[in-house]
Image 1: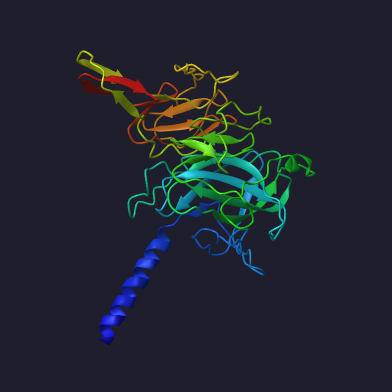
Image 2 (image 1 turned 30 degrees about the vertical axis):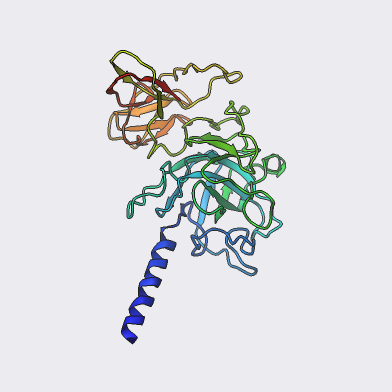
Length: 365
């Protein structure tokens, strides 16, 4: 009997350990300490940074040269259908509940991955999100925070933090103070609470923003979704996007296809979905057909190079059909394209497929 009870207890502990280990934790930039990968306590007792009073921020120092390319990445498999994330910085060291975190990058939807639920066990294949260290950061040591509001599951807020050392930055804090404040939801520190099964827009995401989720989009605190308009002109040397761009392109869902039962002749059609990386200038179109701008051409480096030079700032550069990258300050860092897509002539394209439809009209969303 004793061994039977012991076996049951061991099974329960093992199951709980597997659930906890599956939660997402920031792996790059390297977080300080040994971060707990569970969400923040709803009481706010461990806000910010999963810290408790007197907690340590000892850990690896991440070097952040202004203008350099960095990568946000994760470990774990419980991505809860994705959601929306932010990267923010505070100059307080260590941070406290009263610290002001200023947003340097917002990812609306598709973070940490674009999947219907969670990643397959053992894949650890969450997305990676390249970003550029902005010129607004002042030189010196600071704390960077990754925050995440999940799409599916309990209404939670996740947060991991890292030590950063900024070089080549501003000599004062004026530009830094002009950045938007980090969004906070689902803890006692705020009355903001998120809705289930939505990708979230931020009231003030800042000019360094990527929107890549499948939606439906809704304001983080339940308000109307912010329009996907081009952001303000970024500072010199910075890139800014509102459609798939610096950010995760893996696990991208196929375009949604809906139909109505309207008699129509039997047809054969070929559908190609093209993903661009910059929004068109001017106000967003209100018509059903939105023209897709052709990105500027860029030289195609030889296959096999992971880091190469390029000529047109902000252009998509293909490395064969299986890799892509953005031209940033004359350099391009390649990463694999999403499954089912190819990189051709400076665009990410859905592979052609042919299907037959009987008595059905097809509409693309």
